[in-house]
Amino acid sequence: MSTAHNRPNGVGRSLCDCPECKINGKRYALHRPEDCEYARRRAALVPRAVAIANKRVPVIRVGDVQASLRWTREFAAAMDSLYYQLERKRCQKRAG
Ligand SMILES: [Zn+2]
Image (cartoon, rainbow, N blue to C red; front, side):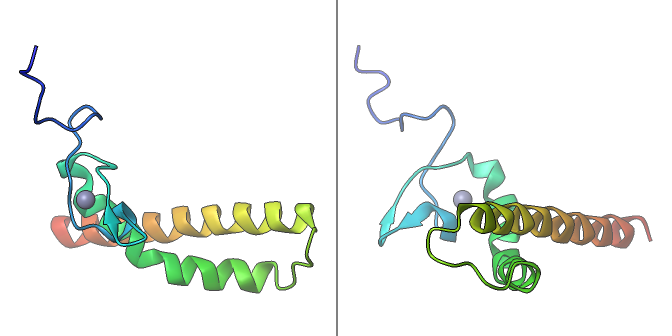
């Protein structure tokens, strides 16, 4: 009954120092330890993805739902393509 005592609620998740796991200065167990590196690499891409999305959807007026949806889509697409480029470089380095 008390065997699961010390374990976090999410299966296999644990507390870590990744930027995405810190919300308002509090740490949360949002992913598994083996995903830390992935999370850090993604987090490092966020400022560039934001810049790309801002360039593609420059002006969002308050209440413009369509534009903010478009911005979110552009941001996600930029994150994916930046991450893909990064991974490709890592693989080439490993293979080369
Ligand atoms: Zn982590």
